[in-house]
Length: 346
Image (tube, rainbow, N blue to C red; front, side, top):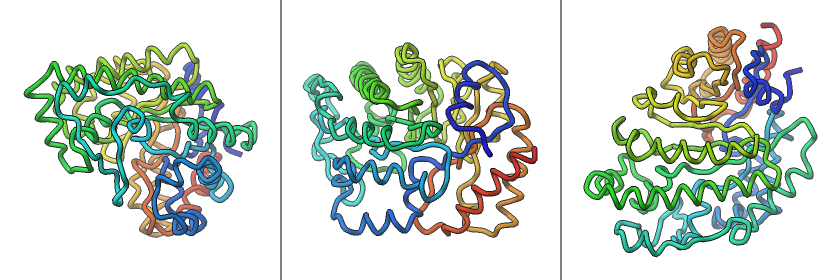
């Protein structure tokens, strides 16, 4: 059997090397599950699923029951805490903010709030899931990183290049820092609340990060990510940072106080370990998800190559990004079986 997921986290924290390879298929694992799609079809809005603890907890547990992965990932959304901040949004089909935040006065008017009070559906979901999970299966919580949240708030909707937030950061740096400070406090509060309710690790998703330069990362992103992870250190849970599409900023990653660095499919595992500098931290990643559209032989070869590169270093097997709804379910199951089989052999 593959070693329990929380065990590798503990070993990664202490710098002990391990050959076990726990499996985590990102937070979108439910997309490929027929049971999830059937449930989703019954509701007009994703918000109903996110804000109903009985539904959100059921969806959180689905990949454990149906895929046999080694950890549960909280079913919520990156932008969940932005509503109580005073930034209402709807899904059509993705998030659309009614009033994008683009001025200093708007930022100063953002609300101060407590996740414990304003997001009871998230805490209740965590309570239900942690009471239902086997002891050896941890629940992972997460939040959007400040820059990714800022990108959504300023742009107002999804974007390929998030030009509005880049323009704000370039033209009004003081305003940009004010926004990042507000969002940093929000993220710390949101993740701390999740930890108090029982999540065993947290991940900071910076999924919009690839649109900015390395110099902007150093000025506007790095100080706040460092602050978040430093303040969360008192909880003694593993901290994961996932900077999607931002390998051009890798020279700064070693400054971040984290246990695990998540890699997307663009970056090699070997380069990830080089950046960590041999400090015993773990890499999470990074199989190209599109391999799941191919054939079993190709999947086996990809897993063998990835695990061979990892060797005996701390590692959490994961896709380089999320699953898509049309990926063959049988290929996802085969991938999990192959990771178990090959990691045991190694």
